[in-house]
Amino acid sequence: MVQATPFFLVLFLALGAHGLSVKKCSLTGTWVNDLGSNMTIVTVNSKTGVFAGSYHTAVSATSNTIKESPLQGAMQKSPNQKGQPTFGFTVNWSFSDSITVFTGQCFVDDDGKEVLKTMWLLRSRVEDIKNDWKATRVGVNVFSRLQ
Ligand code: BTN
Image 1 (cartoon, rainbow, N blue to C red):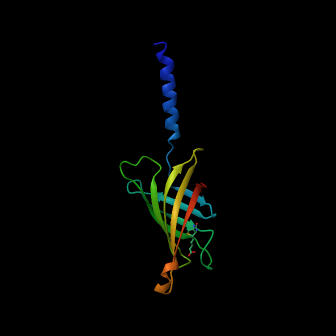
Image 2: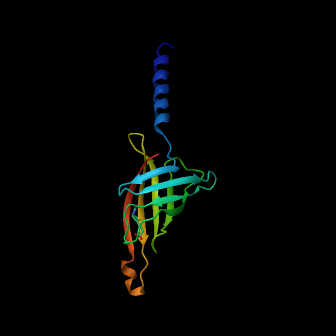
Image 3: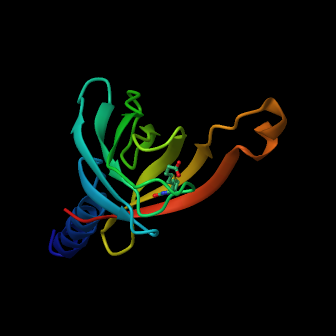
């Protein structure tokens, strides 16, 4: 018993530390990405994972005045979801004819900070089918939490 006590103490502390490190990601809140764009996700439906919010891009492929634009998305809510969820959302730009889809995953990094690693496709409107080949841009964005 005398030898068993330190063993269980170490085991208890190790399990406790592990439990603390498995911090879950939440999409709700305000985020900033590596381009300086801001995004706010207002509500994430706890049953369906469907969410909505707004996006203020720092850059544009157009010369139009940038305006805050609505976004709609969904977070994966399958029963075997173990935290760090995958998600996707669409930004319907209110100041251009374009639309962007993002897909990504919410991670907790080694410092315990939430980070959204995403890829996106930006579809611009072109006048003619002959220009379809140049209508889609692709990229990555990394978001960190502002609030
Ligand atoms: C447009 O130029 O027609 C609309 C704005 C597009 C902004 C893009 S979407 C992908 C990338 N990430 C951002 O935060 N902004 C740019």
